[in-house]
Length: 454
Image: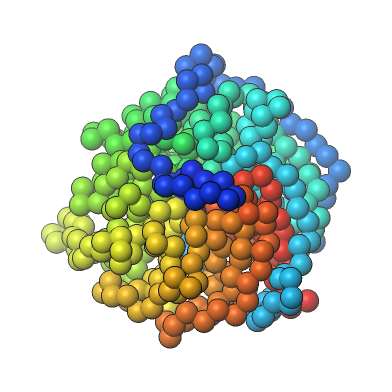
């Protein structure tokens, strides 16, 4: 939604165009459009695989799912030196491809770029595999699903390993393919099979794969589940007694007191689920919002930082264990004027939290919730684009396609370079990086930038 949205988007999508700034959409203003759904479709959809002439690049480096392999939106590639300052005109665009209207960010593995797309001409979700070298399409797998335009269509980032690709489509179809060939393995229709309610503005949750299982949070009949990537069989699932609905946020892995867990913000609160068997370890209703987009971020060994839009601000939770029972306690809550995040998940880096708040300023917070610095209104990242850290540098996109390079430092906002790298139409999709190639997108186009010093 996005992820990325977010995304991360993916986002709490802002109704805007290239020239006119409009207010953020209110929750409930856009219900799922009539005729765009799963009421009359079969449970299992028959898809089509089309192969093309593209070839995987001979380039190492990976960004295998939303927020990267470590779930922190940080890349530490010691083998690739990045430009410390950009030339006039910004980093070179190596290739660009047209996409269906949306905000879905890419995943990168083994010289391939994977993206969830929607093809209006064929009325189908399309999972596409492109070459990291030149953007040429290698294959695409498409299945028919009717979607009415609802401020974009696709919003999710797929998860990829050497063997599997798993993607969640806008109407909550979970598809597993062979990541090399695109060969179909299985599909889950979450609304039909698990009672999932398609979120406002379509699905924004991004899956990830661990130990051969994809971890997803359907809402509906079960809060969370693990599915075997080879067979499509449910390995475990967590009951959903409070009937929390799916939000746009994604699941975050965490370890606490030797227990591996998955943390998720459902519509009614936040829960920690055992990674071993799906047991509910703890839950809290201290933080709940149906339109939640940013994912929880892990702070140290026992804390979680949560943020959102629509006036919710942010919160720090601390996990406490007593006599074998885990509970989540609120340490502090911040009003949105101090910090909140509408669309993208903040970054925890070297003891500080970085993110763009609703007044479009980049903010650095300490772990007590104090504002360390802001970029000030003179450096506004309007319309709330994505951001990431790579090799100690901040890359911050505004919603109009302008990319800024800055120091990732608690000492203050120190801008190094900036450049217009996209056409300026809702550049909200999460970014991805591998071996000095930064992939960015706006509403209709995805571009690969060379940010290495070569």
